[in-house]
Image (cartoon, rainbow, N blue to C red; front, side, top):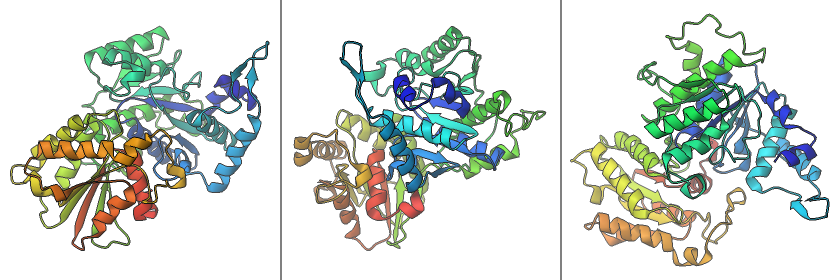
Amino acid sequence: MAVYLSKMGYSTTDLNKLNVIHITGTKGKGSTTAFTSSILQSLSPRSKIGLYTSPHLVAVRERIRINGKPITEESFTKYFFDVWNTLDSEVKSLDGETILPAKPAYFRFLTLMAFHTFLSENVDATVLEVGIGGTYDCTNLVPSPTVAAVSSLGLDHTALLGNSIRQIAQNKGGIYKQNRPAISVNQPEDGIKTLQECASKVHAPFTLIDDQKYNLDDIELGLKGQHQKLNAKLAIEAAKVFIQFTDNDNFKNILQNHDWNVLPEVFVDGLVNARWPGRCQTVADPSRQNTTWYLDGSHTTDSLKACMDWFGDIVKSDANNKRYLIFNCTNGRSAHTLLSTMLHTFSSVAGESVNISTFFEKVIFCTNITYISGNFASDLTYKNINQKDIQELTVQNELKSVWHSLIPESVDKSVVAVPSIEAAIKEIDTSDSDKQVLVCGSLHLVGGVIEVAGLSELAL
């Protein structure tokens, strides 16, 4: 990455100009970035706040935002080709052997493009979300971020990061940098110890946030779900440390004499105004007047628990609507583990009065392919698929089988496997009744639903 950056005319030291808040974690890192960016905007409305996240839901421009808004198509085109045209030749060794291809892989290219965009736009601060892990992630190129933060740790991407909390914490703790503030939410014991060790190795002052310090119960957070309170508290600490350590004139003198036992009102405004599409999001369909969508890209057991807590609270007191579930998971994740987690959590939240076997009018398991034609929407194209699995609906039929095994009394015609997101939505459209549609299991799925159902204007 440093070689590519050099070919673009930058050094890694130039990235320190971005005043980076670097955020990783297994759960909640995206939400934490959204809260943090919103707080910084609230603190200094005239400043430019860069935000780099992944993945996108509908348009790739969503990954690179300034003041919460995706950069324009014109800006995206300009900065894309600035980088594309600069990286025009392979990197070779002295004996002529190719060391690096002319262009880096997709995520690396977009990360370089984000750096170029934010430097060109002279942003005052940058909230940077890690892709996967930390130590070896291509975002981990900034030598001296203003602050580095770790959200809740869990077991995910174990093939890459290790199959223990200690190994995962060690990887994610790699974003802590020399003498720069390092913070974390409370973690399992091995996680805390390992993160402390990571910080100590680089002499980074380490802070474990006090999750009891601020009572957020009376604040209507912009991101819904009980689990968002912890993410909000991490964002509060990240923003607080940022204004204490940054050299940026727009921020460094803010709240100098504030009593931090009290949450500043300007922070509250940031938490209330935060938006993070596709995460515990409710969207009233603009063209289907009787349909409400509940969108959540949850795809791990922990995030699906949080999703069902949120959805269960919404629907347990409303018995008048027909409810539908659209779900998918990527090959390699356990269908039984994910679905049993969902059903167990939902049953405990909704209560004994809810009959889970008849609660959903229809359960639809679909692929992430956008259209019935077999094509993807342009920005949702996904190459890492097994064509045979798609043709035979291998994952979807497994999900269907597991659902029936978990709920033996479920009627076969109410549980279906379909080959595309468009086909799934057609299943929804067969009924004219008032409908509540829960979409979860995959951010790619949520993005496809937003695209096909025509929800972009309201959802994004």
